[in-house]
Length: 475
Image (tube, rainbow, N blue to C red):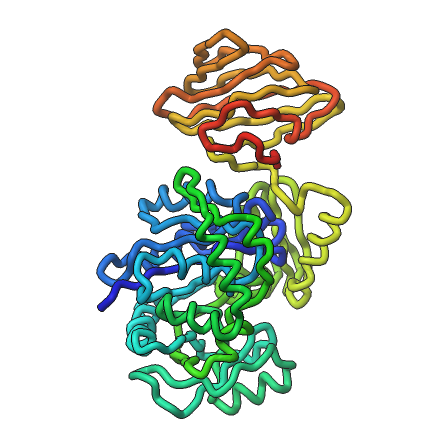
């Protein structure tokens, strides 16, 4: 059988899972369900080389190095990391992946990087059934067996016509219903949740897009025809892609196609869209509490409690979500967990950074995290991966003191090159051109003290950069 190319959609912010999920480090990059991140779990499910080709990743530029690093950490070969110039929903994103495919009739498996699938064996069985129908020219979606009258998902009415073993024609797609309608769907038994996972030939998807949304396909073709390569990344032309309108696969293609099919399946699936859903799938104690990290409960029930730093003690509370990170804490009733995104919107509107990033900020060379902020000064912990290097840069408004805690640092300061080991340090004057590198085989750990009139990250002027970031805005 033709190998299947997974096309993994890695976009999204996951604002309802704040304060863990942030714009620059969203839920798909977090280990919310196990020691692996949700992205790594998704890729692991399609790593069987006998069935799948290397996956194609679709993401935005801000997350490209994080995604590449997580794939490398999992020792997963990829078939390309395509950088969407802007968010335009799933129809254009999948068109980019289809145009990127090596052969026109390649089977494309569209998945989201932030979904949970508990039953991998059932997942693979559903894919095998769907692949037969897809090779015959059908566009197959996966219909999840509903276990509750959820109002958060769209539904699929399964038709009576058999397309292939385990696959039937779609009778109709249904928008997210109200509770009474969802209860009716559950009682009827002929409806499935629309999981937003698809399998089809690349050329068939493009044919259907040409028929039903030719303007989208035209801009995607132009964008990929003028694409450039940047290290391991594929950059579609920005000007052409920005002219593309936003639309989903469902609206642009599936709901209009006469070849839409559905593979009904029970996968232990969830899109993990809120803290309430994490509670639903989590391991509960005798009182129905899910605890992650340093947490204790007393006379409490039905709570989801997660600590990323300090001890959380919950006494005499029920049905709460309590999540603590180094820079923020969330407390909400479980039935209001969907409204967390309203806090994120307020943070963004008020210009606060807590919606964007946490104390630890990841970079292609490693990470830094804030330790202390005061008037005209701040202290950071910097960790540089072995063999990695920061850009050659300068600052207009701040000076820096560096102290090596662990490892070896090679420091370029104007025309000097210094080699520093543990407990040694140096000073970078305001305006000095400088670079920090780790020439060793262990992570370089440093303390940095910044002082000056302005300490924002955007006070960085890059001159050279091994990650091709010269000219990019610093976030």
